[in-house]
Amino acid sequence: MNKTVYTIFFFIALLHTSFAQNVMCGHDMVRANMEKMYPGYQKYVDQTFEDAKSHAKNIRQTNTTYTIPVVIHIVWKEEEEKIDSSLILSQIDILNEDFQRLNEDADEVRDEFVDVVGNPMINFELKDIIYTQTASDYDVNIFTGALPDEVKFSNQGGSDAINTETHLNIWICKIQPIIFAGQFGGQLLGYAYPPNDLDNWPKGADFPEGEFEGVVLDYRTVGRNNPFPIQILPDQEVTLSKGRTAVHEVGHYLGLRHTWGDADPGFPNSCNVDDGIQDTPNSGIQSMFDCNLYQNSCNNSPFDLPDMIENFMDSASENCQNSFTAGQAALMRGILETSRCVLVDACQEVSTRQLITVPINIQPNPSTGIFSIKGQDLILSNFHFTLFNSAGVTFPLPLHNKTIDLTDFPPGVYFLQGQDETNRIQQKLIKK
Image (cartoon, rainbow, N blue to C red; front, side):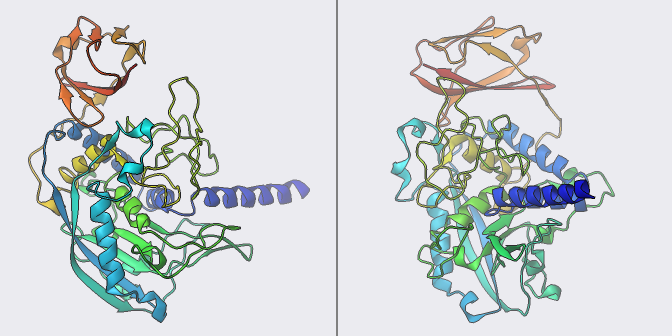
């Protein structure tokens, strides 16, 4: 009996810890809940992510700014939740600044990351604002993982999506605070569904309807001068939003993962879990709305960089966030040219051939200039290689036999990508 009671309390404590680690952004809950509802969902999200990374190498030299049409749904119950359109216009301005690196705090990135920041070159065009009064409350169920998707359907008190293939739909409502054991446990600020390229699903398979696609935000997070304070974590003072929640969630909508790699809830150290983007340093913990410039949660080598708390896909204070990396920018543009290409009228024929990513052992790395490929049973002459730096500038690859010579290259971070008919190689090179 005592053992059973202990086990129950342990489970509840673990559940509470797990949720507290992910309370501000619902991305982890999206993945877990959709996988439960539609087995195989995560597989296709992952495949879309890998396809976009592969495609990104072909778009780094383009200068096209993509424009995303946006529809805003304001679903309100109390008068305060019926926010003024000026906050919506302010939020669109913030998205355009941050996704085109025009934000005033862009130059506040630390010296360690100056060479890796990038410009996604994505514009947002407001098409409509739809106001809907509701009698519903929008809750998060921490026991089932269910998110308040009712806000997206008029027959459930919400507002129906406007063509999710051709528009980014953003729903704004009051997301109810998390109450755990009768006490405030935290506040979900927003969530988004990542692209999962539904055309890749097996014929006849069950999959989520397109109406799920888009972003949900709490009304207190919207705009630069939102007057409504919000408490995010227990034992934390209320704060006023700077409009960066939308930036973070649109990043998820365009395929980005958290910088700490979306490790499983309840196991907060994720140094062995990567976000799949080569130029974001590994981080083992979330910043939890803090702004600790000295945080380095994965300091496992002399060349390890501190956590990039200024990255929009971390969970640091909005006062600290100011950047995407070049790799993140390329991934989002890859998504806009593949699984979300209808959104920006950028569809084209792409190969459906599935490449296998193979590991490649390069030593030493970092190096002063000479990198050797060790023990690889690959015919490298069959590969088409691309070498580029963190700004996306490509270079001829100085590959001789199995030696890469970067002696004449300036110090910095470089990225090697290559593929043959069936294999893909990806590797980060650090030139000291």
